[in-house]
Image 1 (cartoon, helix red, strand yellow):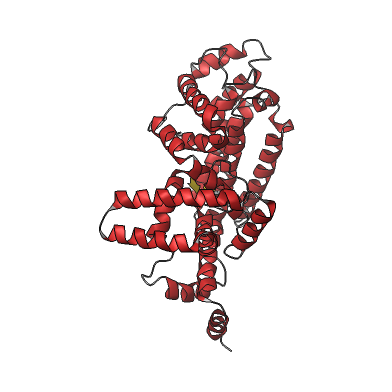
Image 2 (spheres, rainbow, N blue to C red):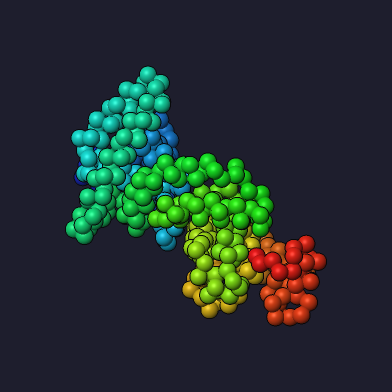
Length: 392
């Protein structure tokens, strides 16, 4: 039997819902890990059935798009390999929506979808947002009851597993619950932030810290999401960790870990893991120049953490960073090894590590030695123009 016939026979044994979920899963994996060998014909058949417009990615229907709208600034693409504090995997949304509309609240979901579709046909977007907000409240209330018991949580976890193999789906559901419950407060906090933070200097750190402190007094359980909103304003993502390093009594990792916003260091590492996943996809697809840019960002983040946190290697953060960089080095080595020894590879260049320059090494020595070596602070002041006593 030809391969095409075997694929067709296999698909016919599945229900339409299962085929649709299979397509969503394959596209989720393809997005996070690159091209799936041997799946081209299977994807083509599924897309022919469910993508009538010829698109190669799932187009979120309008009812679910309006429902998930408050999550938009907090969505991230990639493989669900880690917690990603303050962020929600975009790939989890299709499975969560299927569960809500088929298992949690099927009748209410049908009514909601019908209302939204009618309003959008009449171009009543404001009213559609209001209907979505009402449905969000209902879902949050039902989630509180459903996830409030160990049995309910376990049943939910199992049911979600029928829609997706993603390990983060259940965690993303609980994150969604938190965000929707505090969506008005998060929206106000988001509006209070600067449109962009080009330079996260001491003054800006102090302002953002004050905003976070005030927000946290009433909404402490969603602080990670507030921090994620701050991160979207930063030119350089690793700078989010300055909320912790600036508040610490010293640069020692233990003192940084004792600050209210120590989680920002873990969040920076989360984003570093996301960059690793993106690097892997770029390399699989032979996008070397994209990989070069990603790798430069990775090296800059590694360097920034090492410079700004003393005894980092002895902390859980440092252990995680070391494991990450080891796996990234393996990816790069495998790529470089594809070429003869006498042929240079752009990813093997030391120039990617800007701190390997003389100025970079002097800055590193100034940061690391200013508390222990006489004159270190003066050197830092000359190099960066910052006050001698300033912490990163």
